[in-house]
Length: 283
Image 1 (cartoon, rainbow, N blue to C red):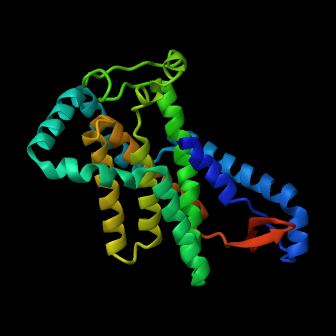
Image 2 (cartoon, rainbow, N blue to C red):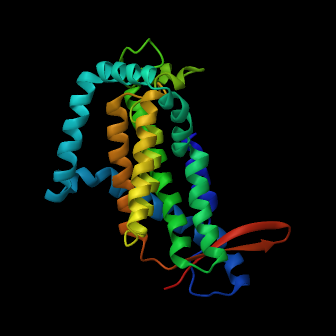
Image 3 (cartoon, rainbow, N blue to C red):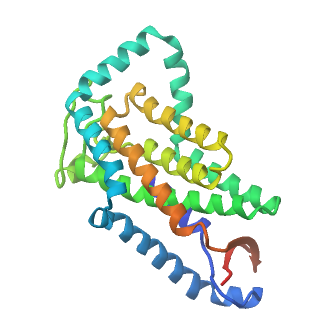
């Protein structure tokens, strides 16, 4: 499903960045200009994200040291924490009732739909900020999808739902075998994909609309609920959702800082019998 995010990003952001706003010229330059800019821009951002530990600052250390510490403590107690979650769930019916609904907030189709709605809403109501929020959301999800896929492939961690709540890791390259046939849903717990997706989008929304207090509160509350629901849904351990949430926050924050001041405009255009989404960058 993480591949869906990347594919959606490439389709959604298929763009041309040109000073000449002539639609005819735009169509002539789409294949040459837009693909080159999109791939290079996304590739450069990926390099910055992966190499960020080499450029870590004191401010970032203040964030990541506690996160890594909490993750390591959780790892040492994941089985016990999971057992406590399940005991609480068994005593409180509302957890089993609402957990499956809350966890939908981290599904690919949900986060992509929310990003798309922000863009379409901005397009309809001529709101540049809303349109850009949608674009930033999709880009953040694209980065999150790639990073979480690599993490899962390297670690091959067993999900709580498999092995009766016993924690086990299948490290690369043995993961290449474990991910065969139908076993991918069993050995791809670390990090949590739902958590990284929910927190990536939540952070974009919170940063874009930070002046409206209710937006960050609501966005982060939903993302937290999604992350915790992954434990009650037997899909992840506590350490999975801690690191997934932290990565999602970092990615969302990075994308907003890197891209929010660009002047992007997307609009539907028709070429022969095909309908395309074209994007312009105004210098």
